[in-house]
Amino acid sequence: MYQHNYYRNKKTALIKRKGLRILLLSVIVPILALFLIYSVDLLIHRGNIYPHVTVMSQVIGKMNKVQAKQVLTPVAEKMLSNSIIIQYNSVEKNIIPQEILGASIDVEELVNEAYSIARRGTLGHRLKERISLIRQDYQIAGYLNFNEEYFDAFFSQLQSQIEQPAGIAALDSGRVIPARIGITLDREKLLMEIQKSIIDSINPGTSGRVILPVHYQQPDISTSELLAKIGVYQTISTFETSLQGKEENTLFNIQKASDQINGIILEPGESFIFNRLIGPAEKEDGYKESTIIANGQFVNGYGGGVCQVSTTLYNAALLANLQIIERYNHSIYGDATNYVPLGRDAAIFYGYKDLKFKNSLEQQLVIFCEVKENSLVTTIFGERSLDKDIKIITQDKKIHDYDIIEIKRENMEYAQNEVLQEGIPGYSVNTYRVIIDSKGESMEFLSNDQYVSVPMKVLVD
Image (cartoon, rainbow, N blue to C red):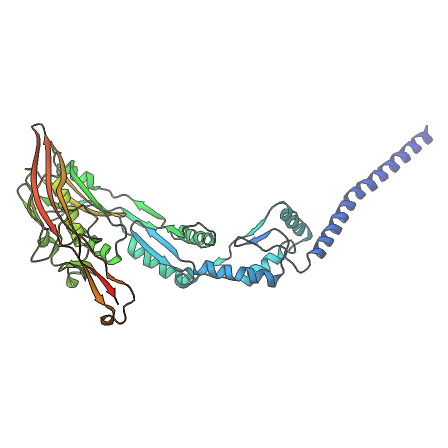
């Protein structure tokens, strides 16, 4: 019995040792094989970046450092020099990241990082990265840097243009001060959006446009709440004109003039006089130089854009069925005035041309004139809505061809273009206000407007 147990235990020990050897071999052999494969793989790619490594959308795998640098350098230069548009409503800024933000890319550091993939850290970490490269591409990110001082200066500039504290609606000297929504910029999100836009700029079809990330704070007393307190509940009329493509100075003037009108209270029987409210709109009044119409020509002058404010207001007054006392059309109708149909513009020239209308509705009115994104919007609110529909129509439109003036080239020695001045046709048109109510339809004659033509000037031999 004793010998039997002895041999049985000895046999069990032998089996255990054999199993242990098999287990060790099953672990060691694969590790050795894997190490051997990695060593051979490392030898094959010696001096080169491993396959499937991508930087700035450029596959640089299988390249050496010199080749990778030659590929990435022009790409980095293009990314940093591509213009990016920063946009918030109608405010746009076109920037070059390298110049304005001090953007930079360390190509040499990128190449070194790319080369270190599957060659850095412990053996286990290297093997893990190498296996990952076989399965999928490795995108290197975080290579775009900004000069913090440059970015802070740019961000501060944006803050001064965009940010504003929340403000409650209030009454002040015959005017409703509209509530103001608080606006703050998100610095970190803006930084990320700009980085993304710069990186995406190397891909065809990308817009290179960043919409400013903002946070809004609602005021404690809204404009509608204040209007309700003074009994002004209804929208009488609204009219808007496009600001698309306007010069920066023109937009500034439009904003300034509309701010001076915004919130005006017009009592029953009271007249609105545009020039009395706005003034000459000259440099001394804070207005900027832009395109104006003077003596039948488009020229530079202070206050360009103010006429768009008067025109938008005029049309809102027409649609509110207010009595028009004084109004003038522009001398010519072209690119600077075609934001409104013929016969519906209202020219302003301080001391000579004014816009005047009367609150003939026997109810208190509040006029709001605001820039909203790419539009100028005038809305007239009242205690009650109109009991009629208003339409503005034009009839008897006539077009007058422009003349062509030929100028000898010898008198214009340095002129390059054949056409020195584009021609603009003249027009004549009658404008009416159509009133539809329970009694039927009536038509009110508003104006007969004459727009002069501008001759085309052509250079000839």
